[in-house]
Length: 265
Image 1 (cartoon, rainbow, N blue to C red):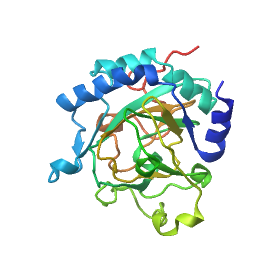
Image 2 (cartoon, rainbow, N blue to C red; image 1 turned 180 degrees about the vertical axis):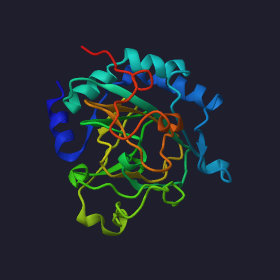
Image 3 (cartoon, helix red, strand yellow; image 1 turned 90 degrees about the vertical axis):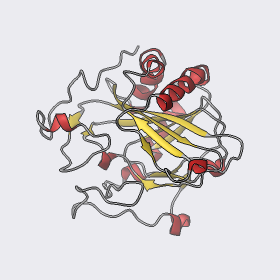
Image 4 (cartoon, helix red, strand yellow; image 1 turned 90 degrees about the horizontal axis):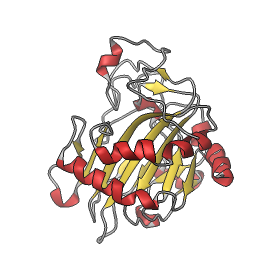
């Protein structure tokens, strides 16, 4: 099962899975609707002065947003993540909702996720699930093989400010848009219920939503494989878990109640 996708994920740090979650789209759409009505403490509106150009996001609400909770424990997502990572176990890190309105020009800059996170594991995977049709021109893009560069690039917010812990030990991201011909950049036209799986180290970014008809709603479920540990980044992380700083040090095992193991076959 998923042998081709597993090989691509290992080689490129990203793969696309077609139609696997089409029966879960309605549930996830309901979850996004509830999330917008009941935003959590990590809610971000990236375009507060441009309501017609809206781009918002929220995360770490899966316990209180029932559709997300059901998806975590009842869908095949955990099993898929485990298979692609080729791990013994699979744990949920968190979910992340991202919504760009039709005609939104807000760009998601190139980045990779690992430097933002206070966790690490032998295997990592994000499962990005679109809930609307997405053209290739509006789709999230990936630099194939960048998960094997053995680098952590400086973490910065989407307004361009570097995180406090982005110091001398981390490099600035190369100018990918200015030298696209130097990279193998992957992206796909997507339908609701497709999924893109990618490693936390894989560099990715996204253009604005060029569709005048559809929003670009997506939910990303983030997974951890074997030997997951806490990492103190020495400053802000995203998501933030400030309470863990007081009880954990780098290298400590992650608390199961915070990051649960997900039952699989």
